[in-house]
Amino acid sequence: MGHKIRPDSFRTGIIRPWQSRWFFRGNYKTLLEEDELIRKIVNEKIEAAGIVAIEIERTAGRTRVNIKAAKPGLIIGRGGKGIEELHEAIKSALVKLKKKGSASKSDKSTDVSLNIEELKRSEVSAQFIAKQIAWDLEKRMPFRRTIKKYIEQMMQNKEVEGAKIRVGGRLDGAEIARDESLSRGKLPLQTIRANIDYGEATAFTTFGTIGIKVWVYKGNIFKKETKKQ
Image 1 (spheres, rainbow, N blue to C red):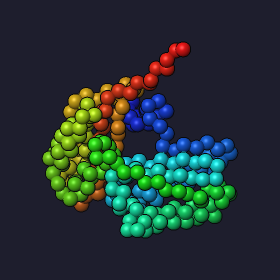
Image 2 (cartoon, helix red, strand yellow):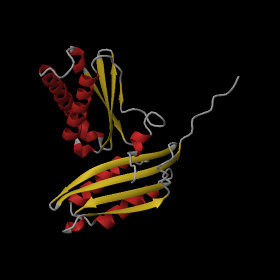
Image 3 (cartoon, rainbow, N blue to C red):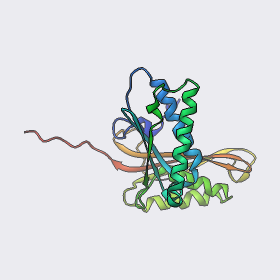
Image 4 (cartoon, rainbow, N blue to C red):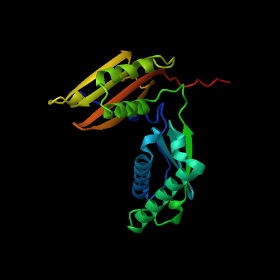
């Protein structure tokens, strides 16, 4: 049997940073619930912004949420109205969670600050590519033409050495669900130093859901050797 694991979680703590950076004794469960709630609200409210990553940092008395998106203008809104509404939605949800007794008793847990970062044009994100494919499939675009278009776009980038796209479901409305994939270049999944970006998304079509998975190989990452004095 094959033993499969997400490429990003396999490399977390080695060449990839943690998506949640905090450590508190005694209330790990409640803080984890708050993190999941924040991620859920952000993904639901600003899904069209092309969210690539949501990183949560906690310090004494403050929670900082870093959102990396391809379209930050949709998050910020006109005059900053959009980011204010998102901030209020997160804050009110954390207050409700605290009232239920599931969250931390401290009022400091609701002190949340948002930081929006734009995805660079030269940067290739597997998560954003997966969402773009999902949006195209929802518009009834042919899946073969779609995945070929995006894999060729990725391979034109200088830092990309290999890529793979897999789609699964009732493709083009077929009666029997199947999965098909297309790959270019090399993809060393078993090498931990390989910088592999991974993303997945779901397309909600009239025939059912179609799952999309994207792998992007961007070369190897080696630790810098410290000079001996």
